[in-house]
Length: 364
Image (cartoon, rainbow, N blue to C red; front, top):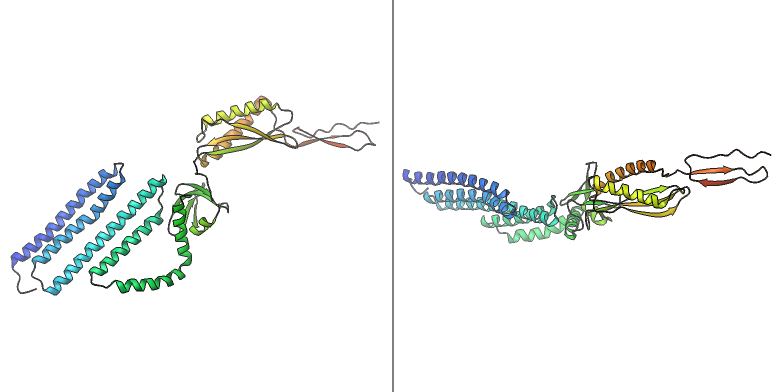
């Protein structure tokens, strides 16, 4: 310090510091209440703006009061220079952290609303935060008097060596960006890869795609594997899917009666089972003559692939009970052996019976 400092000067500096702490805490409490109210509104932008102010404004106000206290003290130029740069560095760090948080929240909100799902693509959030942190770090170094031009040149040269060493990581990173940018696979979609792995996409980060299977297991698949696979998305172009149930009836059945009964059972399932589409009319399509029966497919409709198993289960149960009530036989393979005589070869004739019939051979 330049000479002795009067008590009045110390009191002024202390008042600045105390006022900064009190006002910063009060402002943070006020913004916390405002954030709670903003969370109850539909506009997500209000949450983001208030969150940014809640993080940055109290710190900036406190640093500003500390700066005023420093200016009130008769410090040497070297000390004042160091304190000025230190306080400036604090402001740059706080603003960078707040900007990274707000930018990540904005990207997350945009991706969520655009995809129409409750999940979030953290790969875009991570990339956005890294960019903001990098810019903040460069500004911080520049404010501290560090020349950033040679640093950028060194980073450009060293970046090539890093890229060669992290080929797999970078391939997964760009594959994840490609997956989300193509909008063919989004968080919340139910997909199946060509290797048989299937489930709901929980998230796509900078390295992996997280898939939750129906038994509630988690699959961690590299983004490059997903990008290079043949992917079946059961949520595109819509969530509704067709449920095809193969059936068969014996040759003795009245096909018109079978179709009428099957459609009635299908309509009952569509109206009463959770996950079915009540507006969908079941269809029956005969397609082949089998060895002991006529086969056909029944077309139902599910609101989501997760309801497919329950709809099939209920339909088979109710159709079997209704066939028994109507006397309709969906027989298993059987054959009848007929002996025509000792000098003639025996013939084998397939029939639609539940058990093998064996007539008594003729005797001479």
